[in-house]
Image 1 (cartoon, rainbow, N blue to C red):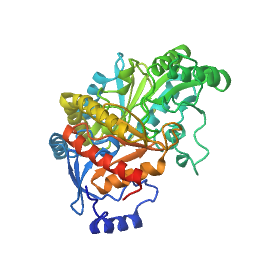
Image 2: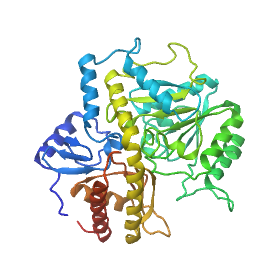
Image 3: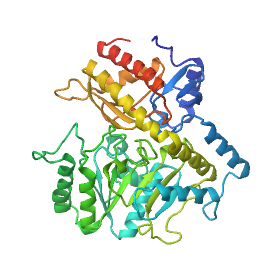
Image 4: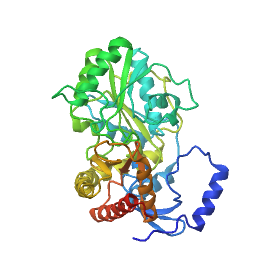
Amino acid sequence: MLPMKLPGPKARALIKRDSSVISPSYPRGAPFVMDHGRGTEVWDVDGNRFLDFAAGIAVVATGHSHPEVVKAVQQQAENFLHISSDFYHSKWVELGEKLDEIAPFEEAAVSFMTNSGTEAVETAIKLARYHTGRSNFIGFTGAFHGRTMGAVTFTASKPTYHRGFYPLMPGVVHAPFPNPYRPVLERPSGEDYGETVVRYIENEILGHILPPDEVAGILVETIQGEGGYIVPPPGFFPALRDLCDKHDILLIVDEVQSGIGRTGKWWAIEHFDVEPDIVTAAKGIASGLPLGAAIARKSVMDWPRGAHGNTFGGNPISCAAAIATMELIEREYMQNAVEVGQYALDALDEIMARHPSIGDVRGLGLMIGVEFVKDRKSKYPAEELRDRIADLAFERGLILLGCGKSVIRLSPPLSVSKPEIDEGLTILEEAITLAEKGGK
């Protein structure tokens, strides 16, 4: 496939205007200026067509501008655009009821609606402190929970997120996340590496650093996103749940990227048969409209009126979009994530067999990571190669995003079809071949 001449003239002009008025802190992935999108396909302002395998960082769950989501937004917009949390509206209640229905624990669930995943994490942090009366937390290296001051303290995927912002929130200690491909702890023979990490937390962190009775919660991504699309070993979450139960610590799972059907279940934690105490959601919950939620056991969300609140959380238009989104996911796209996700993983295994620069392929549903290495024996991260592959794929009409040190993430809309997977992976393999040869 021949590369396109990107960015085009209209895109270049808009990028120049952007540079004059928009914060330089945004981590732009490619010179893509969007004009419109339908499903998995998007077009830039110069008329170039792309397949979107990033989906706004796993946000556009039902595809770009799904007619049912658009209709729900239009109908709600005709009624009213906003009512603050000082009052009530039916979409808010309806969404809360749906979240109670699908919450990954048996106990009744109560939700706090937010504008974003970061806000949902901040809510969980505050709630855990209030409910337990404790101040300290445990997080994990490689984690990404957001960029506001509390959330960014837990974030530990890149030093860039901390540089220039110290002191951060006190009371957070990080443990190594159980990465099966890159373990950092010595594992006894026969032991699940996830259990090794939990034993480290109990013996080294709770045994030497934090008194267990002063730890409010353990905050963890069920599958690490920004850290490299890392799926932990099967023993990790059961052991972590046992540890939390032993010391009356809240288990808080961040499902901002992995939740709402992305892995083929409502929540990735369901793959591990473990019930958390609080779960955070956002990204794919409303097909692109700003919305998040902290969902907790009713017995945990026990704070009084005025303890926490916001102005825009639970916005009626976002709630309407979320209800339509969740209906579509439940009706057809969650199963599509299972089937098409496995189809993509099988195809990537075949591609991996042809390309020694691929060290690992992993994922659940349509949350898939492809890790590039200098060689498979050393597993040394091939960051420059990964970046070059993403650039070459973009020039040929495929939008991708990196994560971790040398991983390309595949997080297309949950509505993606097998033919679109075929087209996208054909472009990806062409980009890999060219990058391995040092070509253009």
